[in-house]
Length: 247
Ligand SMILES: Cc1cc2nc3c(=O)[nH]c(=O)nc-3n(C[C@H](O)[C@H](O)[C@H](O)COP(=O)(O)OP(=O)(O)OC[C@H]3O[C@@H](n4cnc5c(N)ncnc54)[C@H](O)[C@@H]3O)c2cc1C
Image (cartoon, rainbow, N blue to C red; front, top):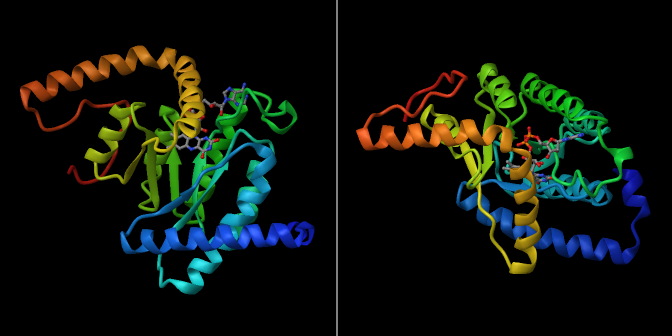
C-alpha cells in the first residue's frame, strides 16, 4: 500500500480525499441503517486503486464509527491469477474489511495474461477462497449463482458467511437460503441509463453462459409456483442441505 501511495500526485491525493469524504458520508448512513457498504470490483487496471480506497475507507470508518463488525466490504475477483495472494495479504494485514467473493465479470475484455487459464482454475480458486476466509473467520459474502460453491459455503456452517445473488438470477437459491435462516442479499441495478445499460448487457452475456443451468432452474421455478399455490411451508428443496432455523 505504501508503494502505491508514493506514486500518487497531489491531484490524485485531492481526488481520493474528496471521494473518501463522500464515501464516509455513505458509511455513516449505512451505519445508522445497520446496513453494509459493499465496494464492487471493476476492470483489473483499476483494482489496485479500488483496493487502496477500500482499505483507506475502512481505516477511517473504524476510527470514526464505533463498529464491532466490518461495515465496509471489499470485492475480490477470483478469476484473476493473482487473486489468492492479494486476498491472503488483505487478511494477514488484518484490514477491518469484510470480503465479497466473486468470480469476475470482465472475462471478455480483460487481458488474458491476468486471468486464470480456465474456468476450472477459477472455480478452484473461488472455492479455496471461501475456505480461506472461513478458516480465518472473515465476514464473507459469497456472491455467486454457482451451486457447487454455495454447497461448499453452506457445508462450512460459519455464521460469518452470507450470500448474494443478482435480482432475477438464481432467485430460487436466494429464497432457499433465506428460508433456512441464511443472510442473503439481492443486487438491484440502480442508476442512470448510461451506467445501467452496460451492466445489463454483461448480465445478458452471463445468462447466455448459464443456459445449461437454466433448464433445471425453470423446473425449480415451476415447482415453487405449485408449492405456493398449494400453500406448503417449505420451499422446493435444492441439492444442498442448509442447517438453520426455517424462517
Ligand atoms: C451479488 C453479485 C455481485 C457481483 N459483483 C461483482 C463485482 O463487484 N465485480 C465483478 O467483476 N463481478 C461481479 N459479479 C459478477 C460475477 O463476477 C460473475 O460474473 C457472475 O456472478 C457469474 O459467475 P458465478 O460465480 O455466478 O458462476 P459461474 O456462472 O459458474 O461462473 C461464470 C464465471 O466464471 C469465470 N469464467 C468463465 N469462463 C472462464 C475461463 N475460461 N477462464 C477463467 N474464468 C472463467 C468468469 O468469471 C465467469 O463470469 C457479481 C455477481 C453477483 C452474484
